[in-house]
Image 1 (tube, rainbow, N blue to C red):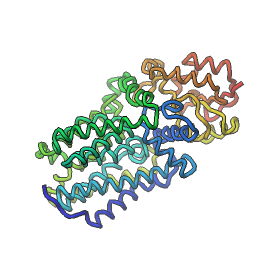
Image 2: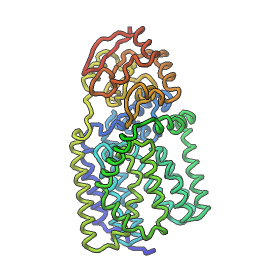
Image 3: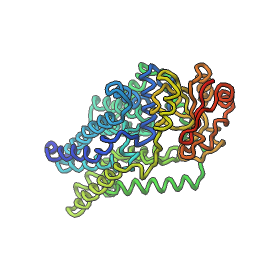
Length: 476
């Protein structure tokens, strides 16, 4: 394995400038690019007010993004996504440099620059809500990338670091748990069974340490044990096939160079068997639940870039020019798309409803929002009642599925009981019913659908206003 010199300063400068330039729209805009960003902010706000994650505010997601957002909000005095995006951009610069250094060690200086370019471009080449948002997948990607690099190095310390980094990735987005077979293969190819055991011990230790920060049993339930009701919720076969084809097509179009380069390098599959394992487990994680959301594909970006690098380095000058043009084009298109995210995914403006709620409440009074509108929950700037970031956990509604009462079978076990107990113990001052708003996609779930909540509203609340289609109820 050839060892080359360090990355050139020109390559380092290009990595930094390219990362900042493409992500610039997200660093300047305070709008939420993705509902997941706002749901993370909801959990962070609840923690700021003294609430406990997974108890006073629960989501079916791991804790690291919410904890980072909480620290950011405390440091910058408010739920602004820009500081967190700046942090992630800086981390991505550092990780892209690490990928380049690893590529330099393996394939020489040219290989290092190509590895960095393939990885950096691949990480941002998505639709705006997938590549530009500080969502769970973007939080997990840097740690997972470093884990791949570490586990492929010989030595127990590298195995220890790799196992710990895989755990960090899982604690940012739990779908990375699919990668454990590939991680074990990387550790075995580099350091044999001692590496596998060391990596496994590090992984288990970091996962177990979560108990120091959040209630362990609630963390396990919401992050892992409740997942089957979400993953295996029913879906129509035609809808699944259409989403799968569209998702694969968009990903390949944005990552044509990486996919083509990996295909050209298939002759070295024995040396890179672990990387193909990372790709296959990433595809499995993307397909789990048959939703095929764009950001799910982030799980295959790093191994694809590493597989494509040696093929690009060995290719002819003409092929390399085409590859460079392809990377530049996809990065440019993704960067342009980030300036106009509303074209691809309309998100309503919650300002009018939030202002109405604020007029009806004081800063300490609680508000309950029926529906799935995390942007509104953040905008009202009030303690959110109900213990959950949205009502989908009690209705069984989820992305990529047909809405309607039939989804009640997929509701999270215990979620309705926890929600109702919280509402009865301390009735919120205002309830916002988003099911009456035509553009908030909750019309199939009127507030009368579930008897315990309907009884609470009927006996203790009165309708006081309709704002942007949302019905506001005040406590009697």
